[in-house]
Amino acid sequence: MKMKALMTGAALALAAAVCFVPAKAEAAPEIMPDGTVFDGEYYAANNPDVVAAMGTSTAALYAHYQVCGKTEGRLATAASGDGFDAVYYAAKYPQVAAVMGTDANMLFFHYAVCGKTEGRFPNQAAENGKPATNATTTTDANVNVNSYDYKLSMAKKAADYVNAKRAEEGKVAIPWSDALAEAAMIRAAELLESNSENRPNGQSFKSILREKGISYDEAGQCIIVGLENPDEAVRNWSRGDSKRDVLLGRYKKMAVGYDPNAGGCWVLLMVK
Image 1 (cartoon, rainbow, N blue to C red):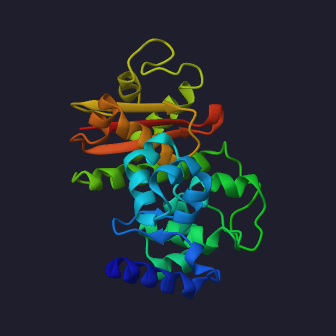
Image 2 (cartoon, rainbow, N blue to C red; image 1 turned 120 degrees about the vertical axis):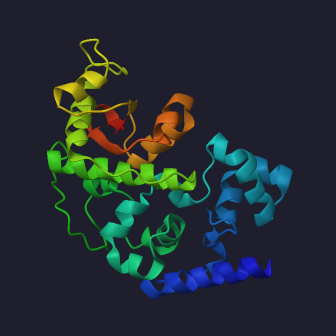
Image 3 (cartoon, one colour; image 1 turned 90 degrees about the vertical axis):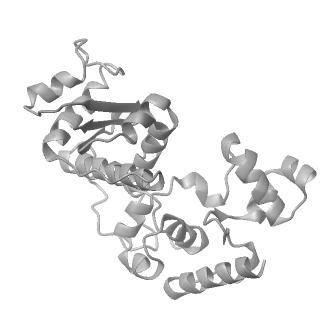
């Protein structure tokens, strides 16, 4: 308990350096010993059935969240439903990252405690969808989401999440390939016509590699349609057995393709 209190106190001190921490500190989310951000009061207020069975102890509520709540779709904090993107947040608010670092949980902690009330955006889609309030923005609110540059920036964020997931699993990072990105972008657009592992003409996805002159011994592909955020796409790929095999495979190069239409189309291509 003492160690947990020290962790939370240190995190609050860091947050205080870059934002106003609400006076009712006991209601703020906490960084749990495993690094997860959790708000016991929020969880209790929104899950009375859990309280009836587990009581109001933060430790008991967090245990429920870890064992059952997470897979049941229950939220750990009020900010969880905002689709927080740590890569975006660090790049968007470098003054926050300079103090909090680039750890995803620490950045989310900042957003949950004070960033949200300051009007900071949790992800690129949120920034595109509404004007900035109190937070300073350097991105044109009228950005063209169908431009190649925007698609490429989203694709590279997904690639960062791919390597982050590989690191969690003890796998080496895979470098980005611009040539492979061209093929991946074509495949992402093709998903609008046919949501299939194969191309709309019925050919294997590998045919786009041959068309682009990309040599390979082995190639893998993961696709998903209908997800807005890059972290959601990578989480989806990490859950399916065949997709997970590609995601964590021993490949040499990778790229992601993205199309914002149809709720978001994502393609991961890997080659060796």
